[in-house]
Length: 589
Ligand SMILES: Nc1ncnc2c1ncn2[C@@H]1O[C@H](COP(=O)(O)OP(=O)(O)OP(=O)(O)O)[C@@H](O)[C@H]1O
Ligand SMILES: [Mg+2]
Image 1 (cartoon, rainbow, N blue to C red):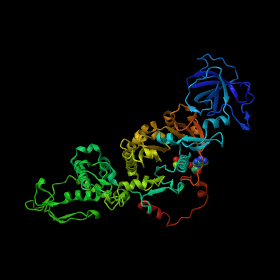
Image 2: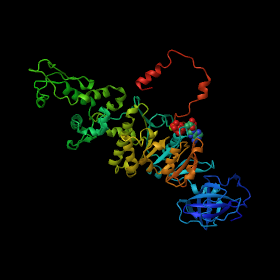
Image 3: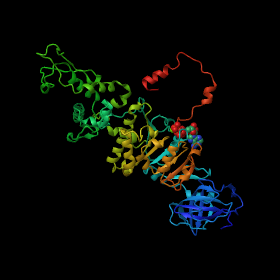
Image 4: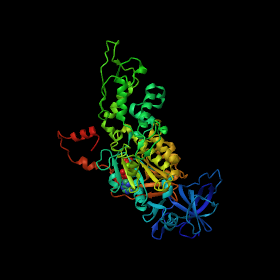
């Protein structure tokens, strides 16, 4: 074996999963050519093989030196001029069995170490089978496909991390395309805050605010009461003790209770709470608040000021946001009716609700098309059917028109609604465990920020990461700032696809979160080429450096053509920016 062309040297130290190799001074070349391929000895991140009988143990080179690591401590004798490799053991192959992660048999001093040639790599990565998708090509060989175990990739969750422009969106497209092409019954919901994926998936169903074909509606009554109160009037759960907060809750419960006969089924009124996802009209809510604030009554006593004692002139029209009119009370004469309303509890909330209703940017929440739950309209089951129903493999929720201040609640609502549908449908034949679903979150750091303690989306997405697997729900986060993402989420990620990462804080997060203890590979992150990734974790057989294929069509995230744009002169024109300003005002293209 020592005479084999692949012979590299021998082991001089074994320290749990780390071994030290003294590279033989007798090998003829530092870059041998084997079967027409050039191999460079001692490249960080390359593999070595330790054959012991019919077992081959594989490891990754993590450092190279001209003195052995811990030479004095272990009193290692070594030849002057030798080179030493520190290697982290990653897995083994027994006889003709497939390569397996983890070490059962440990090597010992003086065991031979060999170069890993292309044939060994083919043995490790194996062939594509029913349970795998191709994720890219191995960086050292254009012919070597790297596969990921699809079950673990999805249900043990995954993260695609990398600095801006490192190739995250392209990697996402590669993975989703491989899933959609290989699995007819697959389904994916992609949360796309910048609307950049539409161009990459011409066959996907795209939901977008104000789109004529598939407008994005997220009924506001999907919010639980805390979310609703925060969104409508800026109240937080701590305001629970305030009378106006309690009255708002009462009003919402009553409006929901009066609307229990729904297309998706009758709901028992006794089970309805302020958190139940039952439709009601936000305009009616405002109208009611306004009614009690402005009404005039035939009595001054507050508890006798009821709907029966009001001196009403005109009911108004809640649909058109027209207030009810009352005979005006006489402020100078307090001895005879009509008397001023004593119900001033809604004073601070009424105006806030009205300004929300009048803001057209929130129409996708307040006017959810015909998702009213009424018998001849649509209910939440229709919304689910549209998003994750049987014919769509991929639904893109294009959130580019969602105002930034409600992005968090919007992502939270989408996530919780899908989570609930998987939880309560876990035993149905068409969803839940029988038809798992992947939720992909692009630009995750913007709404899953670890420092934001009031984030609703973070809570909802954390729940998917912690519990989703049991109901067939997997998640993928895509981000350029892993150090800003919730630690709970990163701790649950089974597979990391790390592209070039230049910020040291971000690198450290990947280092500490990545499941395999392979810091040497993670240390390569700043020097990766665009579209090159280090993949570690459960879905991949062996931690690998992978080139992801550049897709066509691509997401609309290509770099702008700066030089072309700056080379030519742009004439000034008075009409320039008119359409831009109109779009800013309308928030639509
Ligand atoms: N595998 C690849 N091979 C070659 N070029 C690539 C590859 N992946 C991406 N690129 C190029 O790099 C550029 C940026 O890619 P991409 O939009 O995927 O990056 P990103 O990490 O998503 O960036 P951002 O953080 O801004 O969203 C694109 O112009 C694309 O053409
Ligand atoms: Mg991107």
